[in-house]
Length: 133
Image 1 (cartoon, helix red, strand yellow):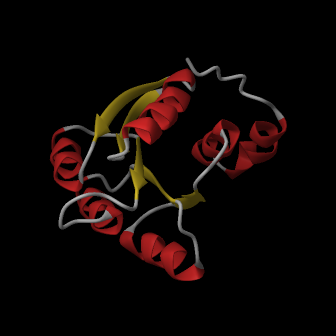
Image 2 (cartoon, helix red, strand yellow):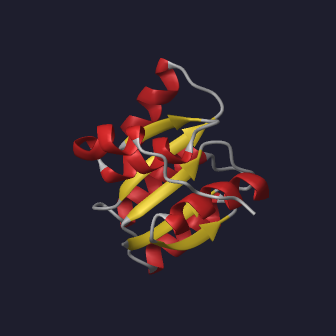
């Protein structure tokens, strides 16, 4: 379906989100910090990048989105965080993200964003039946 980069330093969230993406048919690559993510995005052309906003080190998720957008202008970027307000939504949008998702989220919510607004109703009405081991 496409090449995706998942950027999250939390191993549990990385497994959860990665599992959703793999079950959705994506070829998954992961990064645990901004520098690793930016480096990978400069070397590989991703169709989709999913970025947690809270990352370790001097660069946060917004910085990561801004840098990845420079090297991957056509990639769809989805940001997510446990924190949500208008300021965060505006900052990720200005950095170059296409969508923002608040944690915790359900598999069908993520897939609806990935598939786009045209398939939003179908994706949210159906259960993706994703089983976690």
